[in-house]
Length: 367
Image (cartoon, rainbow, N blue to C red; front, side):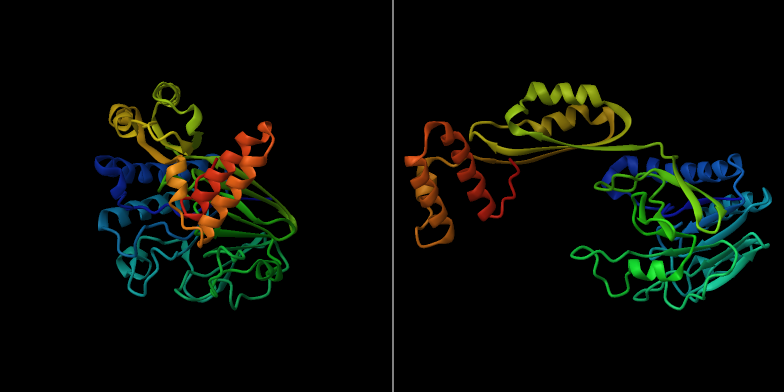
């Protein structure tokens, strides 16, 4: 049985310009969280660590940051673990940190895969195949056939998803299956998630610490247990200090008192909170979001309040839409239905009219 720790997308050195004065705090937290990942690998008696790209946020980190990272990787080697690293799209460059002789000299015992696929045996118990990211190249191209022993891979790049990720260089699910690996450790996506199920199991580890808004599922490393070929299990383990919560509120119940109560209930100095208010509001219903941000900002690591509401249009405003336009035709047909509908249907049709106008105007109101 082989125990593996899969970590990716640490992004040491990220700037966090959107965090203002707290950006420096979060840069330092990335260091602490990566050190925690190293501690966890030793504590859980892992034999192998896979770093699936973007350990650094750019290919030329400051010397002190590069030395910090090398010290952490050396801790793993000194504890008897085998360590395998690929460069990601953020920290890969021909003259970047992973190719610098001064840095590489500090990584004795660490396997850093280059831009060509390579297979490395861990005694007779495991084979590790990897390839660093190269712009415009599918990271799984040209991989050798799997070995007879349990075989895992490590790579960095997006996975093809119709209508979402259609980059010609993206990893394709059928490509993952064709390699017949027991496990593929991926980096690039910042949320921990399974990509392919067994028997050719593959996962994104996600970022181990908060990096930016809109990335739920960060904060983990993966503990991977390879019992035998085709028998692999994955357990996400939370390592992040920061947490992220996004909540959508309907404007109908989002008065100032309600918002204050929600902020009081969620207050946490390590929480990144994004509250979004959506829907159609009365024209005189004004939400004091900016004042609330100023008042409560110190009670969160970061607080974002978004007003995505739109005022309801009165009869005069609706009459302004030209009848020769699609929008004008929609308004008039809905008004015709309102004049003849049963009383119990009127509230629903009035709401449908307002939402339809907002959608045709591209306002994206969610009712």
